[in-house]
Image (tube, rainbow, N blue to C red; front, side):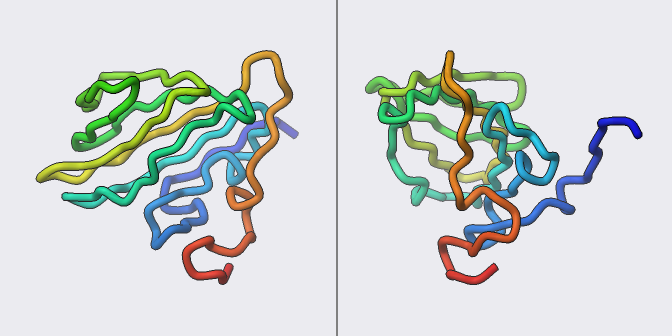
Length: 132
């Protein structure tokens, strides 16, 4: 049997009110983090965070719409065709303006085995509601 998984975006489990799709788990990826996040217009609740403890760097690109990434004390407008890499210890935050955005996020820790956060596993409770 071929080692291939193909799914449409709407087939992945969604958490955080439908705004975060468990793409990594749904495809069976184990070597890096992978998610698709949908943000409505005027969204500012994406938490400012960094990944210094686990050493994970992230790459963001917008599939639709526009999002502002604040990292390194600078704002960067991301739209389709623009990619941004943020180092592990750098604080980052995403927010939208008048239009929403669909963002692809990829993350891994250079030189380390990737360990997926439990909330990204299929069947785990939605951190927002506590139910699967």
